[in-house]
Image 1 (cartoon, helix red, strand yellow):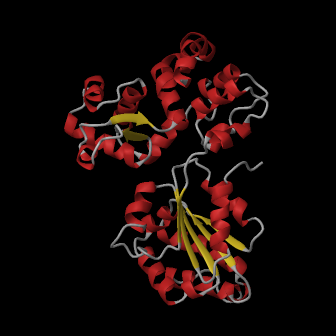
Image 2: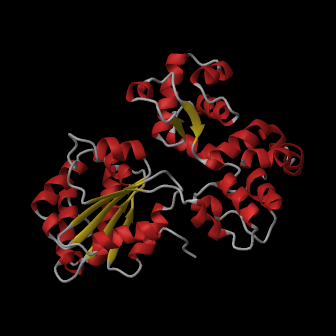
Image 3: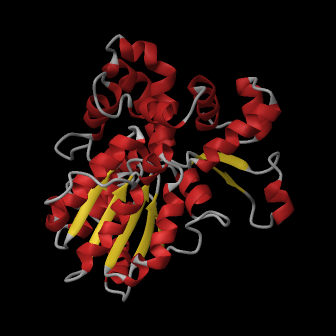
Length: 349
């Protein structure tokens, strides 16, 4: 069942109903529900949905060609793949002669990683052909810093071409609580404090079980999806994960100022600022200032309070990470009873 995201769907529908070609950039952190949103949007429309993978450029072109040729019956009579990216992307215009078509390229950064000329090729074709055609091209990605620096930033080929830009955020409480219709309002609030507004995380809990049972079954037990989720995401996004683990754990445990984090982790302050900057770019941490802080103060890395933005990351680093040895031995029930449960109200607050 698809829950929420009315605003995002309305945005995409508005772009779809606009005249001329549409180039939409949709991005956000992993697990925030981008792919689910796009599949929901596309289900009643003529569309091509291609998900990029981390493969060599030649294989990527071959796989992309196959998805296009499934729709282009005329070209499929003569070829089994396009000779280059320009021919492949140009062929999209041939599919729009009689109808509007949505073309989704999911995880677009993987495509560019294999061939960094693709943004320039796409820019040339967009300016010359595609922006006048009946196509809605959606470039989607989870690598937020890549999208912002390599696609949307000035001096990059696709700068100024997008007709719509949507950065997906986590669901708010009022949408997230729909995953647990049978919970009391107090339990809904606590579930949101633990899982945040990430649909993938919310789906792991069931209101057929109590909160305690869900925490033990879906977070603290080896083999459950959420038990290894944070480590999986950290390895995908960052090197030196042990260092980043120490930094995030320090913040999750209440060390919110730069000096406090330094004292807790013993990482050199100049290096620590770089680690914190990377975590800010990924959206794992944020920095908060008092309402009267000026621009100069906000630019100073020594000022402001660091905070874990993702509720589940905060929970994982507060309760799972420090107790991995016990959890690996199978003591999920004991960790919940004596570590999590006594602190759960404080954590929720």
